[in-house]
Length: 356
Image (tube, rainbow, N blue to C red):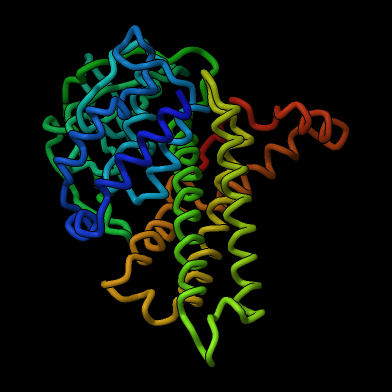
């Protein structure tokens, strides 16, 4: 299934995510025809169990879809739909085939079966029909599926790349579905899930940046030879390739180790590695491209603006590095290496009061 996902995603995104589409969506417009193709391919529901309308694909297989979404700058909430439908599946709820997103930052409360509160920074919130969030009551967490038409207010915002990151406000709204999560899930499950998604998207975007920058260095000539022949440029390209590879390995490991619950330590590590690589890679890419890389006519900015946005979404590298350090220190010196070898640091642990 993984190879089928990869070949289909490369073909679909390669054909449909064109510079014209990117330009038309850079200010928050919705690519309706493209999303219909995504749904027709079965991507958005692939994470849900077969019995609930999906294909039951594990995160190890879904990695190639999320990675491709980053590599091709997919201007739609495909990664978010995968995470939301996976969460619905964990709560034994039917998947949603239409435009779907989730909110990691939620202040929802429930009374008499109706919810009130705010969902902040919802990816593509103005365009999706449904949104998933977590609601904590009595020491347990439940999944809430809401229709965006039931929000009484929508505060529109864009990230640096022009992607919608909106606030949805609900008051006494009836949820479409509501069910408890299995025991043992971390309270900040959607924050971890978002970090997992962004690490893979960054890894995919870094691959694009590396390809574009390497190609430009062989095409651009200075002083009678391609700039790729200069040692300084070669060094920069080597550093870029090194960080792109590190982000890919870290992100893929986090996906491979995540099953019915998130692999917390690998996810924290992957988000730190990918976010730090995003900052460095964007700087190198624009340094090598020079002035042409910041023009509207060149495609580089579509990817680097996403790198700048994604590196801080669902927790900055500083936030995750601090949390990672706390989890490691909790085990004590005697347990450091045994726990590291078993991958147990941070598994299923939520930091009380932690904010990204």
